[in-house]
Length: 157
Image 1 (cartoon, rainbow, N blue to C red):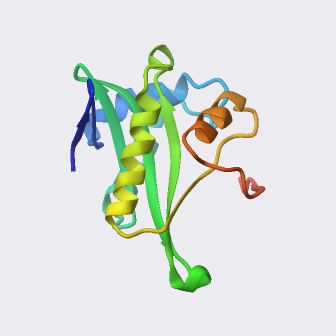
Image 2 (cartoon, rainbow, N blue to C red):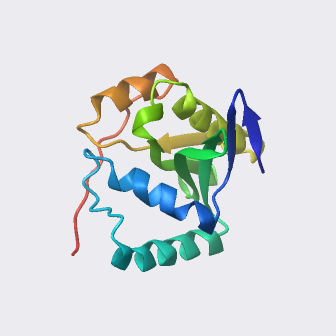
Image 3 (cartoon, rainbow, N blue to C red):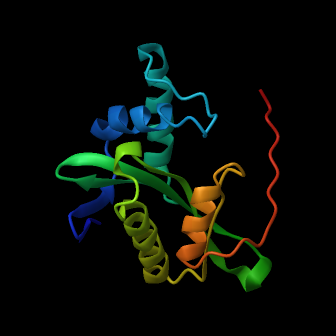
């Protein structure tokens, strides 16, 4: 599915988008994910893309403006027994290119994800945000998200 918003096109990502996506993540000083544009790391990104592409429950999207990738996000649908067997869409890896922030791209991506969830009959969307991203937290709250859970992580490697 491709959706066009004012000057923004949101579509499913393709392999050709990977260099732009990797560059966006590598430029993120707050993320701390160890992303890099070094050529030897590119096969890792290709493998991850293949896993996402093969999954019926995951989708990687890009936002374009003027033919350039200016943002990205990923969705995952999970179903659990709680909530009487309901499904939830998890929105992850939301990133707008640093020079394009504040122009409505992030809001367009989140609105797109919410519309996708509603169209699939999903009752809830959820996302996580790094605790240091105070501006992102205010952004998500402006869009109607409420902080409701405390998340925990454990690095295994």
